[in-house]
Image (cartoon, rainbow, N blue to C red; front, side, top):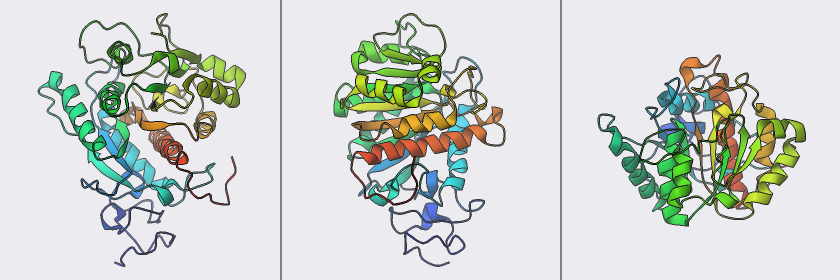
Length: 333
């Protein structure tokens, strides 16, 4: 097998198992989409974060779900689906994020499911260790509770954050205890002071909860009636240039576009308009991001996993956009 020397090469039959064999963290190199070791976007698997800009971290945890379980297999499914995307840079963006960012796949955080109440602290500890090396994270869930220990770790480093939440559910239902629940953790995050509700926004909401905890709610109906560009404007008005964290629950998408999730709700966003919204967030002060709640057991033809992988790649592009990477000359949004 030839050594990987040229990150611009698209000779997909010249390279294989790039998750282990690539010699540079930069560039997009093609290998057969149906073969090889699977990592997110064929990035190198590494526990060594020296020189890395972003670590892709899986959290295979789903014991806080309120309906169908199975998103513990989400990180694996997203990595697998990303193989079909990894030969080219993301459509609609003027640059390849891997030209400017050294991205590694850190693998999955580990925890003992036999001690469930210890899991949040263990996840926070591992996230803190990654962030302490001045590396940003793209977390692949796992259920949405996984965002809570990630936010705690980020807030320790960056201070209170503005949350940009894409979701069918508010996840701000009352929580007066330390329950591990994927529907109450943003209530706790507000009470803990790790997110600033006045500069936080929820997009795609279509379930009832009168108590928003002060977060701005942009419903799925509002997005449909006003369009992606108005939605982008509304998000930017709320968040501004405050340090922010994007948390993307795949059930923000309508079940027609993401059937493989635990709590699907009809009437959601479609994948195309969602990608347009994410592209419109280029240049925000993004500190961390996640993509959660992909449950492959309920998926069809990898529709949900592919949407998750594509949107996770878009999140990387949003992160890269704030560093003004050199533009490419082709795709126009």
